[in-house]
Image 1: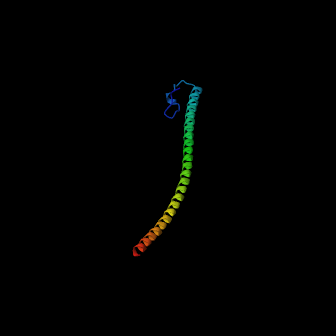
Image 2: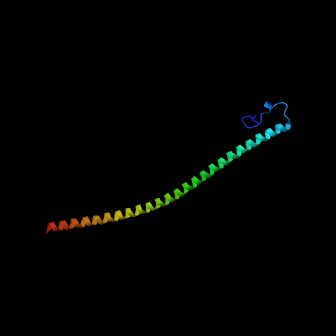
Image 3: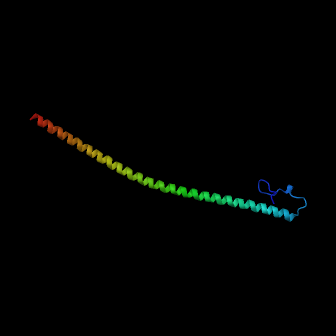
Length: 109
């Protein structure tokens, strides 16, 4: 039963000339079943690979959403810190001006 060519089909020329039609049909059927089994295995492997890929894509989507939320929170905090920094800088400027004014007034008296 190993008279198959590269495609898995029975090579009829290499079969013995005295074989009956039933034997040839049986060999062709066996070859076709082997080819079908191989195709089913390849399909199962491909389906498994597609399932793994879909799971990875879903995990990446989840990570992307989480990172986007973290980025939004970080941007909000950064803006609040910038606002606080500006307010502190303004207060320091006022305090520096007040100290300079007091020092100048103290020296002129």
